[in-house]
Amino acid sequence: MENIFNGKLMKLVDIGNTHFHIYNGRIRHLKKPVKLEGEVFYISVNTQKEKEFLKLNPSAVNLKEYVKFNTLYANTLGIDRIMACIAIEDGVVVDAGSFITLDVMEKGVHLGGVIMPGLYYLKEAYKKTPALDVGFVYPTSVPPKNTKEAVSEGSIGMVVEMIKKYGENKKLYFTGGDGEYLAKILNGIYINDLVFQGMIKVIKEEYDNSFAKR
Amino acid sequence: MENIFNGKLMKLVDIGNTHFHIYNGRIRHLKKPVKLEGEVFYISVNTQKEKEFLKLNPSAVNLKEYVKFNTLYANTLGIDRIMACIAIEDGVVVDAGSFITLDVMEKGVHLGGVIMPGLYYLKEAYKKTPALDVGFVYPTSVPPKNTKEAVSEGSIGMVVEMIKKYGENKKLYFTGGDGEYLAKILNGIYINDLVFQGMIKVIKEEYDNSFAKR
Image 1: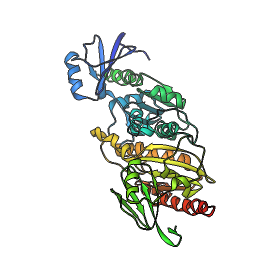
Image 2 (image 1 turned 90 degrees about the horizontal axis):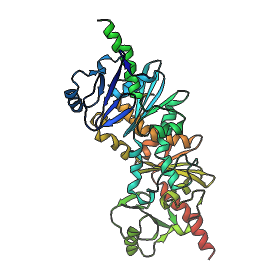
Image 3 (image 1 turned 135 degrees about the vertical axis):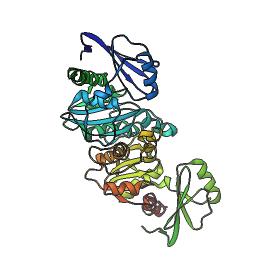
Image 4 (image 1 turned 30 degrees about the vertical axis):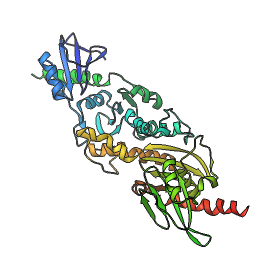
């Protein structure tokens, strides 16, 4: 997706809890905010980090205000999760990080979602028991035929089954640190910059639009 | 199942890593070993605790030596897991404790198994993130429609899906601390003393037999 706005390259920033993710065609992950040139659009899930960022980039536009998100979910989704959903319109989005979020989209409507512990956390469970601290292999025999397979099916396999439950007959999109790994197992599409694709879509459809109306 | 051996009430002991589980018709869980009267049979997964127990009960019989367990699994299963499997012959055994073990039995043969992190551990994952520390409800909408449902499906639901995968068209037997809860969800049979039922079976079929041959 092209990140050109009004004929100029635009900068997109996804402010997370630990990093500033900056996109200008490729993604950089920075621990500290930097001053960016040109049109700057951002989203944020961390108020403190957002303040630090705005000190250096006072005219950056918070896209949150321009998002129209149609959802049947009662609680507010994180804005990064919303952007990933907006990017796909139809299918299932899996963002596999410290938690694994799964969101179901149908014709632009968010039907709901699941929040699983991340793969790292699930694997940690076995580390405290020497007999179970034997590493992982996937896929496994069905049913598993040794301890390594048994713990792998009990961690990676559990996540895979849950994604299958919601992904049947739907397109599966993956993003996040473990996204590429899970996409391979489940024959899904891995999109590294899915959140930014959603941001660009909001800019082109909603932000542009709201300016045209002025 | 009757726990009478040679016309006398027998005592069964399952030595775990934290407790001595003692069965004489009902189950008691003790932190320290006690001297038991009459015929005493035991299994153990903890060598140190076994030694303490044998000091007080030097003539207790370790059933491990009398077990015939037919398995396609490459590693040695814990003796408690073996006893629960022997008790059922056909179906799926789920022992839901700090880990949730699932074992598939067919005509007395162990086909393999899965080791999942326990429900307590899975639920702990959400406690560090205030927005996700909202409690649990199960079953949930499909897909979940709020955060409480999303984290419940992502923890309890994951375990339920895994049990369904292996339990299709099979009888489901549950034991362990969370066994009763999971049995209700999955329409399974909860058997509090499943391990002891396996021990009694071994005593009647194998131990008896080996004495008859002397």
